Length: 380
Image (cartoon, rainbow, N blue to C red; front, side, top):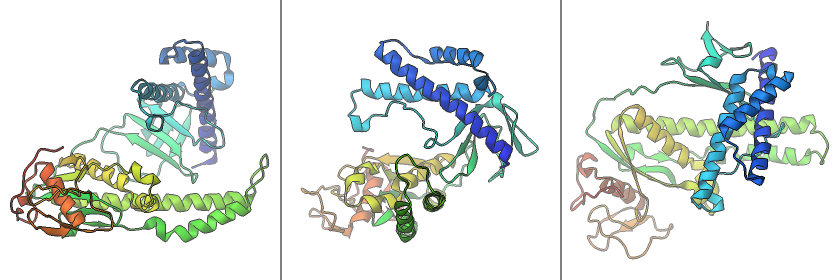
């Protein structure tokens, strides 16, 4: 990106950040005085501010209006969680001030604020960007988001209508159970997703950068040294690489699973509770949430039937007869033995078959054999 375009984007972001902080201030004041502070009132505030402040009027009104819309959505979600009586740890936080050195630039443009011409992105305010396209746009975009990541790279994310790409039917179904020993254990051995341990492989490098930052950390009130900034950038690049590796592995596995199966029963696993457990680091490195999201999006794109199954008691039920053990199995016990029918199988494989049964899918679609006495139940 040229320095002129980068300077123009940062100047636009400074204006939008000022508007966001002004919205936060006025919202807090309105809450104290028990007054309403809706989008219409904030829009009037923007109109008055642009008329009185030449610096603000130099920028385009499109991203400035969109930053108000984003503020309104964040505030409405936080108020909704409060009205519903959710616990503090489950609520969406109220919008706070964006600090110059901490907030990453993000600019949103609607259809009237940008256009594509000769492979370049023209933004409102006479900002022209030369884009390195990762793929051709399948349809005319309705909006674009221009943002900078923690490494300092700029990206343009377009919103386009999603067109389904149906795949040929296979007559096969798949059950998926999430875990930390293997990211995904399925009813098909060929579709199991092993734990790649991308974070563990890069841990030595990350530890080195953390020590470099600790040694060069500036005192309070002092500017960071060049060495500290370099170590911080290297650390951010390493984390970005790990995130890309996890995303790539999840998408490739999801593509293979969706291509080979018509219907997939997926454990509706919530990985947040593992954040405070002894397996937090390994669970985070497995990227279960990102892999699950990739599978759902890939199934929607190709018209496959993705069924989410409630995870309660999936390790206690028998996939063959439907019996449930009296006590939960400890994590150290990796073999499931049914006391009712005597079936013995891997704990995770049994849970994957339970997904199929609970989702109402015929287990005969798994390797052509239906377990004896299998019960077809409605999805929980």
